[in-house]
Image (spheres, rainbow, N blue to C red):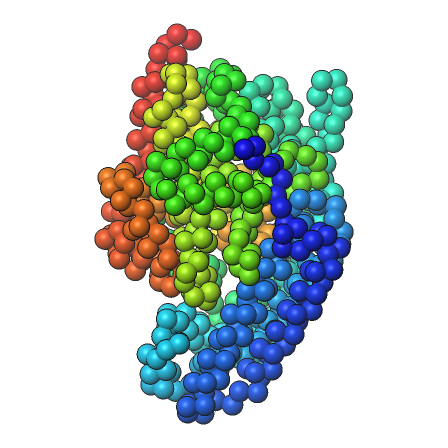
Length: 602
């Protein structure tokens, strides 16, 4: 059958942003959140049997409200992404943000009740049903609450965040929705959305890439002052909260959110920093193949072959390609993916007014996911699609676990998605029909390594340094440009002739308020997935059950424990990261062998 290019979200709530069903759902959400807030507000902790019953009731309301909150947020995210001009969707976002703040306030009160419970009583309660399976998540919430401020202070922070912290993030989305990139094509001037313009960076024509990059950079520079204000105030709010809590390290919160130690993070980045030379050599070789002395930022995504066979693939062909390779690893992954294609879980159409980028969001009440992207047929598009399907499968793998044990951190979320990418990329290289196709697919695979070990590293360096600068006061747009260029030069080993100074303005991830430092988890996920993939290659389809077991544990373990249990490795040590980096750099040696004759011919 022909797979639909657009998603079906009417199955959740008919009528889009004007949906009466959704309005009624939001009304019920307000009631549920109110009940949860009332229960925890009136709970007088005495560490007696009644507290166990109150805790059980609170967890039921927590689960119920949380699922509906995520369902509502996912629906509005889809509305906003499919049409950036949907003003009603922006209004709905405001309503959900307000309810989320109320819910977070209730959770703050709930967490303080956990802190107030006697330790021995609390641990005894966690040995009994039905709370036994929630032992990890409840202990984690209790420990984190001990490091925060009083209920009144944390509640005030949550309330102020609606128009302060989250408001700046929403302002960013609003600004981006107004940006259009003028571009002349076939004698006609077009106004491209940022999503459409971004796809032009993989155009085989160097003149097209140069012109779109110049227009792209100009567009972001035009809005740089207001975007710098948004970024500064967002960071300022976050830093003020950290200061009040006594948190001096800006990495503390993201590390805790990702259930990861500082030692693990430092080991990963230090190993990556020491192994950039092969990546720099790859960038130099790509420059040779493109006929330029040194790569510009606009050349990074350029294809090194103009073969139609390898550069463009229809959506239907791309879907079948993914299904074929997923099926070689896991029949369950293949079956799940086929269902997603057939039932319209994916928004892939290339049209105006769509938000840039790609994402996967879950609808926990309905037990489904939705994937957003703009598909134009490039190998990169196919990788993105496989990546987001990996996210969706992760949620599917957790379907039989308790809802509150499904809240896995971003770094292990990126493990599943990157693993899915790897299946497709590796298999496609091995089954290439010609040497030209093999080179093209291998290059695309290495490009993801460059993105995750260089581009993400630049984001991490920039953001870390920006936050240190912000502690001293407002950071100008010019200074942000300088910080960005310095970070890119360091991360790319001075391998480029031209960099992207306004990348800080164009990258949504810097403005996301749900997860601070929305960067290093991608790299962690990529390298961690290499260990999983190595086991999968050795064991074949027999590894499917073990893989799903690992995914099921991602919501109730720290990553160090997860790696030890399922892979038998210590990821806080440099040895693991050396092996992982070494594995992904092997592709570069093969790439050189295949392209040596092409360089000599030139």
